[in-house]
Length: 362
Ligand code: SF4
Image (cartoon, rainbow, N blue to C red; front, side, top):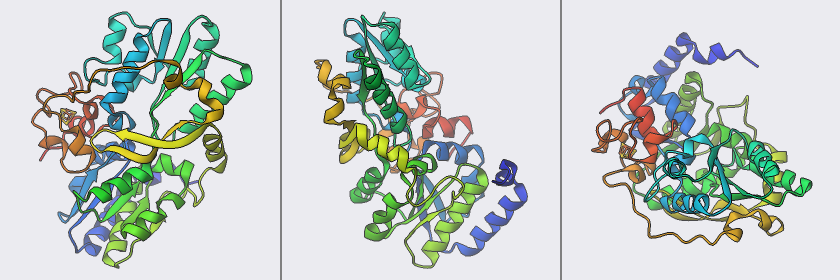
């Protein structure tokens, strides 16, 4: 394992930038599908040091941002049900649904609690046997194994008052859905690092093979990102489309097979609704039949009014790569991290929040 400082070394960065400039001839659009990459690109000013013919777009890589309004409305409806303690990671609290947010409902008296792990939620369930404790399971393949473990643990301990509301999503089907939409002509994907630690590089093979789109899995430091861009440019300039791992210290071809086994035991693929994209077949995770008793959807009669999107918010277009944050009229004016109008400004991994925080403008 090399030292982290090597992945932030300005001399190596300068050399990579020169190599990219020398190699890159064609105009290309690359999309990152990971909120942590979005933040790293903005924070390290990577867009600004690339030649003008390379555009970087942010895709549906922030789990908070891609959670559809209808799913947030349903989570709020569950939180308002009698005898419920609703638990969530903190970043979902302020995300506006159609009519309110979890933070708003907590202010109105609902018992909504922030937890730092699923095991915290399980502990709350154990300590409150007369309540129904629901965990809002938001995230990609990265968080799904830990949530699956909490279900197995609840099952093992015979805890009957712990439930999850799963809006989990899978990244590769969303990448294919974007390509199928055809709104943006992409030349390559900077594939997510954390997700790929779990799933490996194999699940992206169909993107390269069937869509002829270059894929490179990247780590999170500036050198990692520049290296992945160099690898993508090399593929494009050589007329190749393949899957490469630029983040070899974390990712393998098959990924973490133990984590995959746990996921497969507890979850099954299902259709999922993505903000800005709509329903993508087999792009979500629902509890499998053996664990249906832990599924909040089975326990609660969830009935919500028709959804409403935040007026003037372009999060949907931004998540599809059609617009950039500063193309939204509300960006930095009616919408700021202190007073967010849409989810891409709420989440620290949202592209609007990243552009705003690091002063990226047109
Ligand atoms: S700036 Fe705010 S309102 Fe505009 S797209 Fe981003 S989050 Fe939505």
